[in-house]
Image (cartoon, rainbow, N blue to C red):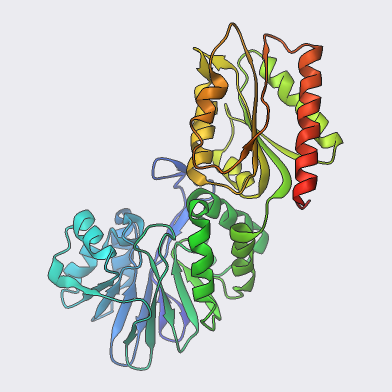
Length: 391
């Protein structure tokens, strides 16, 4: 148990060696499961719990806490809520405070009895005596039932997944802003980006609070929170940058030569390019580039008449994450034919992009292909300039 303010304690767990989340998301720096204990003069509340793997760590932190009156479940996903049943077994008098949408989820996922719940409305307050909790619904950050909790007297926003980061650290508060900024951007890209328009509304809602500290459910606590809020506003609402995100895969070098030529041509025209060899890349890095990219370019050979499976996965990822990019194109090599462009185009219905003429060649690229790549680079540079994309 570590104090973060008077009678407010961190009682979470650090998962140093976790490297994959949801069997999908890379965690190069591990993560934390942050839970918070708030002891008012009359009542005590536990905000969130921890992943079930660390239930005993949480219970050990609560040794000596005689009574918990409320367990505030801000998010039903198991890394936040999974150990609530063990908490309720120790503190049977506790009630679970959750949104109306969270209640059935928690009942389904954890088999918590219905009579244990108290449903809280958006903006509703709960008095703990000398401390007051105000519940702020923040849907789609990143599930439909999520909420944040504002501790009025201490000006602490417990933001749940919103504004968080995956970092395992012995430091409770942010000590390296650059490192946390990168981790938070990765977190946003992988988890929050599909819900940008709703997140903008949630940010406006939180702006009504006088926030002196932000305590997320993953990562370190922001005791100087202004910069992370502004970073989120940038990621959510700012226009794309003068950047091409270029995920590619090359089987025998032909597509690789095309990628190299196009990258050089774009760079010569002042367009920044970030390359991602899908055979070896950290997919989280690609997601981060998609936060800013004005154009997405997919480089792929043709395999069995369609795109390489790794290129198809990149298209699927981009479609799921719904980045701000305004332009998209495809380059690659084929052996005898296929429907690579048609297949990839059918995989991105969520992207509101202008599709620029693809460049495909048979076998190794020849001079006419290289010239077509130069024209594509010129088109992209012109589009970025006319769109006013920032460097």
